[in-house]
Image: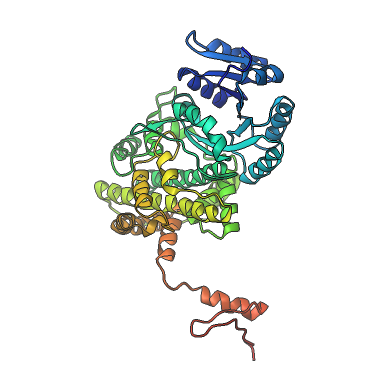
Length: 469
């Protein structure tokens, strides 16, 4: 059995186990390593007679199983566990072997490992994987970045297990160094934004317009057959249908104290470093933080009050406005993430192709949606497009839904329903389309109190004014 297995995975949790089973379904011989004996036994028990899978707790045995140049994926928690896994494998690896980090790793760490391992003759890939445990088992979206020549060893395996759209695999080599992890980080930022927008529209339906649970559920289910078609809209309809053991809607007893793993925060932090505005995504991160202030919110609800004016609303009209507002804001959220990738590609020498990125996001991943085909076509027609909002077709969709987003925001403000995501989506749109912003006043203020200087519109050069003379 020595050097006969096609691929190896370190970490046999849910994702690692499901990816191995997926590969084995594609007639690949695969090896798994985990220090937890129970996980090794569990995978062995799940293996069918038609699958070639060998799992072990011994590092040396595991590495010896894999054909050279070896391809080994790490699916362990980000941070120190990745470095520990690499250190354990290195004594048994040979020059030309390939390590792939399939976790949600911060791209700076990937760049460091890429450099360190290149010096030892080991190829290192950071690869984003999206689709959750079901995607891992039956077809995820895969986002690899690293050495382009070494990718050819991985390509047949990844293309076999990836989700397919129009018979095209949702995987492609994305770029140099940490490009794969960076694209996944931006993906997760977009995911944060869209989830926040959906939750705000749900809240407006429920608390703002007092629409009953069954109607809300059916609305999301129906919306999944429209321009809003996407995985996140689809699962929202399924979630709102689920009942608890007492027959009542489960959603109504789930805590509003949201958790996060930090990838949305990384997106916002790095975007600020690159000076790329992500208003909707930033708001989504902030609102998860706000959700954690539950004890304070309970007190504030008693002290900070607003008497909502009564109004009569036609249900069909309300739902039409909400649908348009949500579509508008989702487009804006994708635009922000794609603008970040455009800037990062230049800044970090990734050489990203955004047609390729949007193509592999069409299936398998959490943010898969019908609109991604429109984005792909836009980039195919104009590869150097700086912002997707400048595409004529996308601009037309936004313009057609302007009334809906503006009316929805006005109604939400009057009802006292928080809609940070929707508001910031419109703010991004209105600021992006403004030839003149009020930052001229900010420039003057900075010069007044700190002599930071400014530029003029009527003359070249750098200027300073003694404002109080």
